[in-house]
Amino acid sequence: MSAMTLDAPSTTPSVRTTTAAGRFATLLRREYWEHRGGFLWAPIWAAGGFFGILLLIILAAEWHTSGTFNGEVHFGFPIQKLLAALRSQHAIELPQILDAGLMGLWAFLQVVMFFVLFFYCLGALYDDRKDRSVLFWKSLPVSNVETVLSKLATAVVVVPVIYFVFAALLQLAVLVLFSALVWFHGDSAMALIWGPAEPLATWAKMIAAIPLSALWALPTVGWLMFISAWARSKPFLWAVAVPVVVGILVGTFDIFEAVQLPDSWYWTHVGSRGLLSIYPGSWMFSDNLRAVVTMNQDGPPHVLDWNAMSALAGSANFWIGAIVGSGLLAGAVYFRRKREQAD
Amino acid sequence: MSAVIQARNLNKRYRNTQALRDVSFEVGAGRIVGLVGPNGAGKTTALKAILGLTDFEGDLKVLGLDPRTQRSELMQQVCFIADVAVLPRWIRVREAIDYVEGVHPRFSRELCMQFLARTKLTPNMRVREMSKGMVVQLHLALVMAIDAKLLVLDEPTLGLDILFRKEFYQNLLNDYFDHEKTILVTTHQIEEIEHILTDLIFIKDARINLAASMDDVAERFVEVMVNPDKRDAAIAFKPLYERQVFGKSIFLFDGVKRGELAGLGEMHKPSVADIFVATMRDGGTVQ
Image (cartoon, one colour):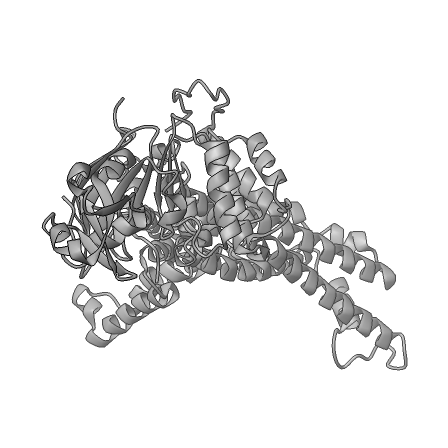
């Protein structure tokens, strides 16, 4: 369904054409308007709050170290120890430590995003049926496929990109803060921070993780949106209870032993894939990939290692999950057409 | 001119109730059709079927399209206002306008702004901050700015006070309706809209009870005020309904020639509400 070529009645020559792309952009804006709180304000508050608390801790520590305690800080933020540690690190280890620190900041914001996306997906095709506004949305020329796709794109592209931007800003701000700290204590920020830190390399990995996470998240997004379109009431309960009850049954009756699989297989390959995969890097919990990550790492292992990411993209788990997720999304489209209002 | 809506043998069952039972009707272009029936009779289900919002059995063509499979195409030509609660509470006036402009090729922002200029609505106002009347004004402004062929209204003025109700229909007639447009409306306040209707459809117990143009209705139905001494004579003509006022009987007749009734008493044109009440009684039927 592309541009429209309908005969306009003679009285109104003002029929514009809307393109599929233009319509889709409008649908994405709609999602943003409704969920500005989770998509924009949540990362601003989380990143700003984190930075503010860090700043306060450092200021408090500085105030004490310059006072009577004179360097002997037994509580709060051990600035001198940190600086000493930084100075004594070998040049090889510093980049890894800084990289791990930057990744920690990213992972922190991803936790916020996990909760935002979880409840976004669960409400995406349910909330408007509950408050009856579905009657308004469905009174406009937007197909159910377009509706579901716009919500999918919001969950796996728009929101991760927004959170990437805020994660990068937070990382930059923290690097600047530590530079000031290092400089204040007479060390070279260039030698200790900006030389060894590789924010560009970190950002490249964070960007590469976006499409990878999108595919990895499909089974969870698909499951939550399927329930969201299907449930007549209590979508959260359905979404969580079904996988958990199945898991308990699997464990109780040893169903998987018949096919020579441990019960834990269910949790790592079905339960967590259906509920937790919207957390980027949750692929760490998948057995074969964890092995790859730890094998290839000299320093502290983390989820955005290039080897781990390429191993992920080559794993069957990854692609089977994406296919199952797409099937669930097709189910969401079907029930979007079929279901009427929620209770 | 082909029919705007063509319904043949529509059937719809919810779990325990039959909502539509062999419903067939046609609506031509340029008509204003009132769909009237008691609560639970199937009005809203019929509208939902027309709008592609529910599944059903039977043949239904709206502007030549099947609402079940072609809803999004259909909605380029069809607009819908349900009662006041359907605009999302979080949306702002300017967002609603941007959205409809972005997805609807027949929407005119200019027209919409003209309609809104007559109201107290401002671009940043959210639906949740508006009174019921204001929500309806916004929805009506959005819909009237769309050049659609069919407008479906489901209890559009429910819960509004009389001033807003009058204004709603006045705006609709003056600024929107023309002879290429068709309006299908359900309402409880039938007396407020009977003068603008061109056709009438009564639904009772999931069936169509009466489908006629207002001209036919005016011709078929007559009310006669009869003194007690002529009551038996009146009953001989098989009236639909009898009610007592000040010791006289008022009879409603369907399809009895005026000349035959002339001797019985004073004749009136019954209101649609009177006909409705008469036909909705248990066992009451018209055709």
